[in-house]
Image (cartoon, rainbow, N blue to C red):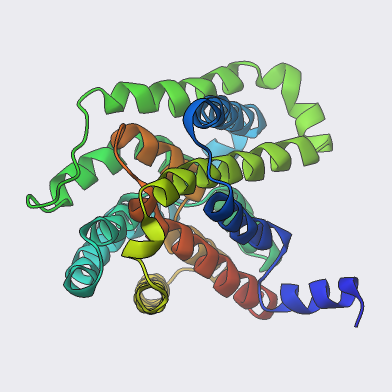
Length: 325
């Protein structure tokens, strides 16, 4: 079997080059972790890569698309409720199970998943493949991430157990706004000059999107390896965590699709609600963790989000090929 055939077979079950790069990045950090001055360089590069990513998001997002999406208020409200009400409650129920046999930071990481906004690129792509309401998905995912700048830290502060040793710096809100919200607004202001080339040449945005995530993963797991993450998380613990995450995703997806059907949504809207309401953003969650928990080892905390992200990509990739309007 040739390399291209193997790649095609893996894509059928939702495993693409990006997911393989994520796994290889963790392996690289495990073997050659960034230390000392090099670690500082990686962190600096990561900061500017994330800022550039949200600048490009702002430059690509058409205002008329947002306005059209808001006209469908049931879809937008459903996505927000699923993201910032349903998911936090589910993660709060799952976290105590993890705390019984996994490190405390991993249990907090499960709550962290629940507080995150939806994915942008992935949920829109899967909605498009399934022939769902793309305009509605663009609006819902974008609004979710903009609101997440404020709502995600507030939710986390409200839900994080008082016994947790992880603390959130008061200045985190401003730092998140600086790195995520401000570049997005600047991107919107530059949209008249950048929209056409960005929509014509999509590769640069994809490189920044994937590259920034890989940089953050490498930086965080380098710090984790230096602090002994693999001694704290043996293989059996990884399996247990992945099973919990699969259960969390399955329940969330079931509740989201069930609520949409009860609300009588047309199938195109239902697909948008499904992908936006049941996925969580790694691109927003990773840099936000670095800001919220500055100076702390975030490798165990972001591990559930990273595994959840990979799981949701596999599941949604498979479903999007089989569920069409």
